[in-house]
Length: 411
Ligand SMILES: [Zn+2]
Image (spheres, helix red, strand yellow):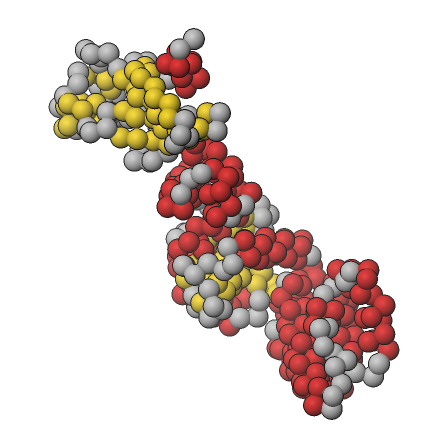
């Protein structure tokens, strides 16, 4: 078998394409394959499928293909153009690639596989494709998925803000809580960031929304009130964000107390941030006794922590009524703590109590929001924070959009 025959077989070329010539450069570690077609072949106009003769050929193009035996492999071809009465002079499609790509369909699919598992730098090392090519693959995959996707407004929504770059830039994420997919990424975290999303749907579709789970963030609340019929009663402040409010208060107490202790030469609280903020089940075995010892001490942060942990019982309550009476007790305790950040957080929860209590009857939303959040944190860590807004969006849609990303077999 010659190299030409080998590639003719393994590339699975469709008629009338054939392998004309193969060049192997062992030193450079690459194989170049020239694809040709016989003369006097009829071609289809890509727009109307009309069968036509060759008008002319465009200059040679090169596509990166899957490696063969660790040799970087490239396809070369001059694509014919046809002259269609309806569509003018148009270039025919290459069956091995989609549109203007620099990679074959097979290579592009491989890149998508690898990009699903690691970041762009890692994918570059594993596939040998450059940074620019991989970003093109990402962007095209997302655009392809969005084109194929049927537009709909989910009944159970989650709205969240995500910071990127150096913290002060935000994106607004809309999540389908049932499918666990990110449906929309809007710029900033303003009222309009969310209203723009709802504006894309009819009033009838918006009326079908049952739950919008979110953080206690007034611009989002305003957007839901204005755009969703009966929106006020559909807002749910989920467990993740409610506990988040109180956790921030615990952290503020810890910082203040640590500062005061350090001044007296006491570093009891040094390196303990993680312990106070984690769910107890996430604290590693080897730090448990250290944490228990800290809890025995008469620390302000210890009291704040106990108040936070007690609040978890809200979501064990069997009804909103039961939850409300639990909350009133908890609120009294938090107030009496006289720890300013805790008192303030408790006041915030009381102010938004309706939505907090609704999270008790919509428990299913809680786990999903936490799941999506941790997924996005992982994505952020993977690329050490995206500095570019558009790149951040693309990657979120790529990993969390539930999109059909792969190119179809023939372009
Ligand atoms: Zn045509």
